Length: 354
Length: 223
Image 1 (cartoon, one colour):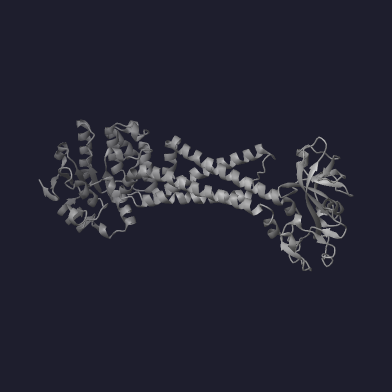
Image 2 (cartoon, each protein chain N blue to C red):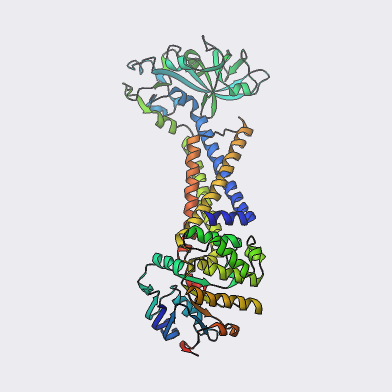
């Protein structure tokens, strides 16, 4: 520790530049991670808030809620416990209103007797109590919509009144418009023979009881959301790639620094300073540099996230952030192994030559 | 007591046709209390001999006993410990750690070997004696060549080793400092019963020696 700290203190510029480089790499990794988490949660926030275990869909829907339609005949054997099972009717819509910007949204019809409607938490207003009343995600507020505004959904001639706002209601990166099941049928041009798009159940053993339907796990349905897995794979690849780059960059820097110090290390080894002391100094030095860089990177990320607000879907998940920090730390320490091996191989006789 | 005993020591480098015999059947003994000077032309094997005496290298043939310890039998870790406790290397000026002040060069040793080193008072006396007490908070690049050399000398004997091996210790020193350093090495041998071996081209050192050896073409002979 003594050698590591003394060296950092003496060569402030040199080590300051290394820390700056680690800050930039970690900042980039954290921003990408936050963006990945933000986009990922915007795909699933609404579904997550329903806390589903199983989701019953029509088998022909390609495991896609918005493409699934279940008739009353198909659903006649479905067992519904309103406290843990709920019908939802989903349809993609475009919302428009006078003097307001258009918003691409996801309409979700709910049954007022079932748990999703019952558990819906509002930031303002009240729940939809009749047809043509809707509760919408707060993104509508940011787009200038207010309680009492009348909106049009798709080319439906009816107006829908915004009676409430709710937070964290996003599905496939679009804000959710909660309304009634009748409105869903109307938006989908369906008759009353149609029951819903899906049955959401908190029961992990929920059964479909019909050969046209299937009860999928919630994870399976989320994974099949359009673009969801591809987007996550791209971010995972980018973050992993950056981790490897950081490992290489740190290893190269430490390698060059260690090369410059080998003569001193040979002298210290000749004088009986154990190689372990020098290796520990290098590892500790790496740890200090990387931790400093990461801490600054995290602070910058949090500041950036706050500054961006809702304009960019970034989200700092403490667990994922901690995992990323540990990953970065581990790869950096792996990078420090190369100079450590060099130190172990130093021949103390080189201090004298001959 | 023999502090250093080399018996029939030979060392060569390279392989096959490129094999070069550096030391050839060297026998050397140094008792406690003696100052030994080894001279010889460049490339004669003086430094190689010093590395063998300092437990940094093993000979190809022969035995090396340091403080009655057969160093060839020691593990790498035990050798580090042996060097730290028993051997003081006085190396040339550029061997100080560049990012440590003069004071911290000694603090580093205290961190690794908390017991048995010079006391603060002893260190103060020695830095006063060699004229470097005013530069203890300076970094090596802020010292003159002579000051660096004197600090390297103090660093070499800071652990109070029984065997002191010096590689050109007077190379950067003026006449007055040569006298002071040689007197110090002589005092360490005579008053503190150490063994001192000095490899040098500097004939000014010879008057302080108990034995002067010449190494030529791998053969060691006493003058």
